[in-house]
Structure formats: C-alpha cells, structure tokens
Image 1 (tube, rainbow, N blue to C red):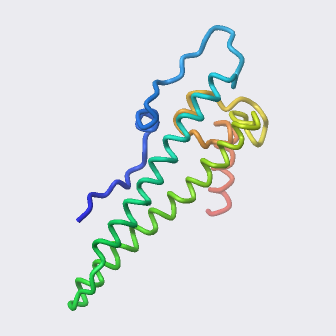
Image 2 (image 1 turned 180 degrees about the vertical axis):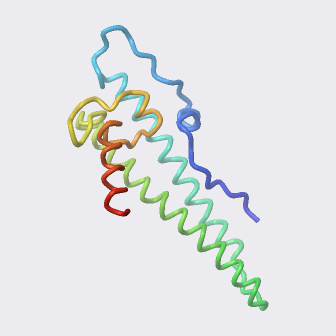
Image 3 (image 1 turned 30 degrees about the vertical axis):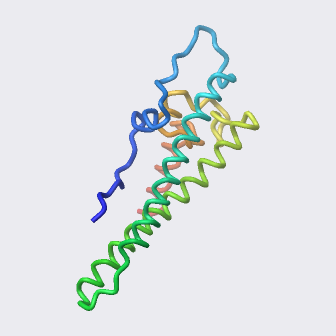
Length: 151
C-alpha cells in the first residue's frame, strides 16, 4: 500500500521544496521588487511541480493497483482508498489553479497586496501561504464573518 503524503505542508517545507531560504529584507528595499517577485515565483513553481508529481503518482498507483477483488469487502476497501486519493488530488488540482492565478499576479506585478484593502500582505505571511490574497487583518475579518454566517 502506498504511503500517504496528505499532510499539510508547512511554510518551511514549501521553502525546502523550492530549495530557497527565507527571504532576507534589505534596508530600505521596495516591497515586491524584482528580487522578491523572483523569490516567490521560484517557490510557487516548485510547489506546483511537486503537486503535479503527486497527481502523476496517484494515477500510476491507481492504474497499477486496480484489481477486481472477488471479495466485496476487499473491493469496497480499495474503492474507499481510491476515493480518498481522488478527493485529495482534487484539492491539489484546485491548489494548482490557485498557484497558476498567483503566478499571473506576479507577472502583472499585482502580487503581495491585499485584494480587499490594498495594503502589503507581508513577506513572512506570503512565505507561509504563497497563494494568500488577503492581509492578516482582512483574513481575520473574513473568518469572523464566516463564523457568524454559519453559526
């Protein structure tokens, strides 16, 4: 049985996957300059590549392991396992789409600024969550509103 790699990536592992260290700010450096944009482009492309590899591995695994078990319990267990894998890959494909959208924002120099209020999201927050599109204050308010709406 394939070992599961479904744990959430920490910012450290995202940086590790990309082979980069946390960005070191320079004195009086302009926010989201070319060096910073390049830093995040490297991170996002490496993350996207890693996710594509996971999708490819799942397809190969499911193709290789697919069996028509005569025992209904064995068949049901395999179908459940495949179902979980497919749900995880679906989430990863949605994340790949977010990464693609974020890479386009880098190309148009719209990356790193809050979609709601327009202020800087911040280097450390973006290293922790490179697809973040809200500053921490707007994200907190959005989560509070969501809790109020859902009870």
